[in-house]
Length: 448
Image 1 (spheres, rainbow, N blue to C red):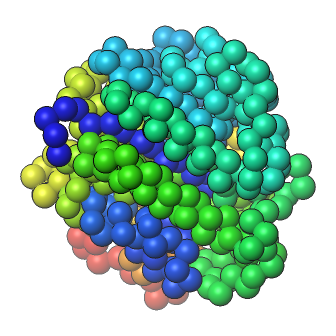
Image 2 (tube, rainbow, N blue to C red; image 1 turned 180 degrees about the horizontal axis):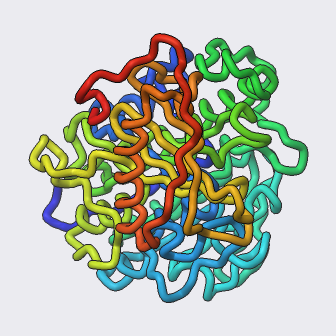
């Protein structure tokens, strides 16, 4: 590692389940490059999105603030100018910033007006890449809003553009955000179009939650896995390009996604729920201080990414960011880390959830419009899962009399996290409780 500050590349996928990766137990060999980075770099084994839908998650990631704080609590909301993105801070500190791919924080479906690009200097993107392109027809827009058609499968087309960017700017400090659509479904026909070489191959592995609940997984998982496989190949190409440019040691690379995919098992579409399949995501870093950082025991959120990358590049973290740098976690140096993940849910419900190492607890504002309303004064308990004994969330305990005290404790934790995120403390109405067979929570268990 040289004395200069590191470059940064964010490799950002869309709607990728954490258990598509080998380090999370997928046996299909889809992600050898991610798995290598996770083992040799820093693996956030327990990583989550604080908002399981595209636009809100991206607003959180870019600003280091929760979606309701920024205002991007649902899709089709423009990122307000008063909330600075990572690009603002990297620009101010001598970096050349570039954005390639899907944005989803602008006012149009196609070209993004310059004033809505979060201050990224180089631009080759589209607001809704799913609206401007198909798997083998990639259309993005340059700095001057000129349409640019890129050849190849969409993942490869954007990766080629990213490699060109790195090569052309190898003598500069650069921050590159590479944002894919895959493995998100193609909206126009509700399909998961893998590259031709992987089309129609059997999935080979069905995650237990999908096997139990069905949804569209039997139809869509083969294509989804093919998309994941090609993304990982592209990730390897980015790493190879950095190596050939002699930039590997001088570049921090982050691989992560905006949210997961439950294949219509939890509601009528693919995300927007409190379940692990929606909120748990893959996340690994390499380069700079992250090389050899090991596997983190703590739970990490997308809201922590902006402060982490700024901190890793010796840029002061703004006081108004609500996330925290994970650098002190490397090597186990920090012990006073949050013991729960806070999640806001929109578009199908006005919901809030908290996830501890053992418990998942979720509430919903039953009288609110999930598009018009970002929050509520009153919520009702809807889900409680014991992740230690029910990791695939197949048995909702919210009505269990034996778990009444667990709900009380988690409700208090959830209220506290809502207040910390800038919301008013709400009233949480208790779900009806009743005896459920032999279930019993022993003293002290509710704290786990």
